[in-house]
Amino acid sequence: MSRQHIPLKDITIGTKGWTAKVIVEAKGMPRSSQRSPVKYQRMILRDSAGTKVQATIFEADIDKFSDVLTLYRTYYISNAVVKKIMPQHRIANNDFQWHINSKTVVEEVTEEYSSISVLPYNFVPFSEFSKYINSDVYVNVIGVVIDAHPTREIPTVNGPQKIQELLLVDQQLIPKILTMWDQFIENECAAIVKNIKSKPIIAGYRIRIVSFNGGSMSTKGSSTFVINPDIPEATRLKSWCVDNKAELEQLTLKKSYVGSSSSAIRAPAPHEIIEVKDIQCLEEKQTTFSLQAKISIPHLNQKYWYMACNKCYRCLLEIQLSDKTGALIATLFGENAEKFICCSAETLMQNSTEKHPLQLSSMWQLNLLINFLMQLIQIFK
Image (cartoon, rainbow, N blue to C red; front, top):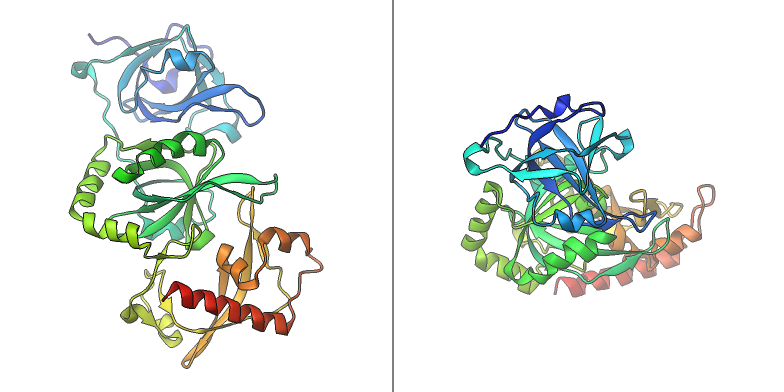
């Protein structure tokens, strides 16, 4: 039967004997703190008024609540510990957080009395990633996982760290890389890779869009994922997968996105290649195009690397693209830039400073250009 409950906005540290009625809107997998071995599990709860609160379960209590507090279900919760939360740790618009422990009472609301509906998550289409590159706005995304690359180490400001990259596509067949960091590899990524043959649908919440590869996804500590979520967007995407099974199989088997794990761009068809003079005539909404041009380095006195995020650095190279119709300046990022100059971002950083950037000789530039063009010829054969 229905129980008396109060809105989340009225629950503060001094509130006594309260009961809240909430839906589990997001729930991460258990993980350990970076600074201690303490294990925790974090979730977002929401009431019928739309107010949200961040809740965390610690250590042995995680197992106690493993079969309850299920995603998208509604519960009555009382006797959780209410605490202030610092702005830098806040992932819900609420000055308070809850600690759910062995004394917390959790009772699932029967369907008859469950009046809290699942709200639309406003997933950002892959084609709109350019709006959010390196911004402070984290986005929600949904896509089909069609490939997973092996775990590898990359240099970061905190030393080598492991990452694993997944290749996702959306209903526009746009491939994008999702980079999983740290414990996401052991937890969420392992579960996704286990079911990779079934092409699972994953929904990611609080995902950062970075400039790497023209706009790719990267996890943050507060990111959460749901594999094959029971929401309308996932149902529609699954149906689309069935209707486009042949195209997805071809994309997966032929690896028609160019290059290795750092590149998720398919080889262009001849009619998709334009000339330099045509770029200024493109529609404003068109953010990608294919160009066949000569590559050169206009300025040898460059830094050749940049901080891609607060953890890692990547290779960056300013180049010039020219054809018979004109020329333009472009930027080469990541592994493609490293291949071009035959040097890793780590080596570049170690051998240059802000005042004394690394310099390349003209002869080295020529040799590197020949080497890079040979690699491109192999890719497009």
